[in-house]
View (cartoon, rainbow, N blue to C red):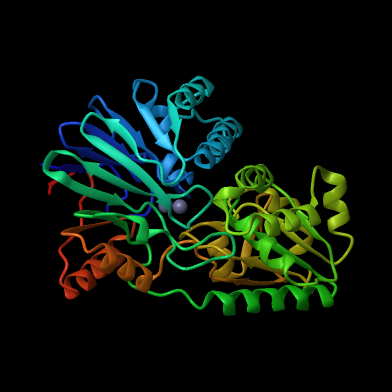
Length: 423
Ligand SMILES: [Zn+2]
Ligand SMILES: [Zn+2]
């Protein structure tokens, strides 16, 4: 018998954490939920774990893992780039907590311990992770090192697939998720983020995006691109490199560290040479001098953070916000009450505690790294599972997604936080 206890990401996006119990206890992901009002944590795991598995580096999947290692001594499995990026994000969590005078849930010692207990596993390698369970990762096409997890549960000869976050179409940096490599799937735990809607055509979006950048440069302004440090910064630089822009591209913020992990793991990318060329060509901002230079000429500035909740974008905003020739271009989902969302809805931002009206143009482009509805259904039909457990979507979307699943003749489960489901 297989039981799953839902420790997070149940009718919400954030704090992914699922405890699988087959006799052996295996934890899938242990993330946090970052909200404008503070961090929400997954429910505590009070059992002795036999193993933990991490799907990818994003904080909503890894953010509380070092805290778990205050008491846990089990092995944790993830791909090598996932560990590389998760470490950057964990140290950044400590830095932000320090700046805000808050206590983080873990310290450097726990990060070191987590790393010590991590067993890096590449895609396609079969691993026995307990006496009765084996595991294999496949590329999930979401960010570098992101994995679909295929678990073979020897008891009852069942198999369970956990998608983590995925894309099932080709994107700039990644091939589509490798669902074709999965051998069997009785139970599917799938993300549901866009379970009720589609993304606009990717190529069209790229085209509109680059045209807007070009127009801004020709008008003598700055195209300011506050972006997610993991994946998006690197992807935008890759996109821009395809076009002969007449202005320099500056690259500022934590995306630089992440880019180094991308470059160190070429086998996890679709076209690593193209990305390397693109990253070699941009100007890596190291300090105030380069920032000032970026603001003295028409320029493209790729910076952080993706929802404008802090980050290097604030080094440029005091000048850019009042410049009608410039353009602030958001490329990710904007959570309610974040500065990015507020900018889109009201045209106002707060700089150094002062609320101002933005004179520069501002707009959002959908560069999502999550599967749209069609991709989610295509993956599900290919795997043909007995039961589909819908996680990582807000309540309304998850319910609509589940209805759609039923309509296709499958059996969906919409879990509640803290509840246990027997499969
Ligand atoms: Zn993710
Ligand atoms: Zn996620």
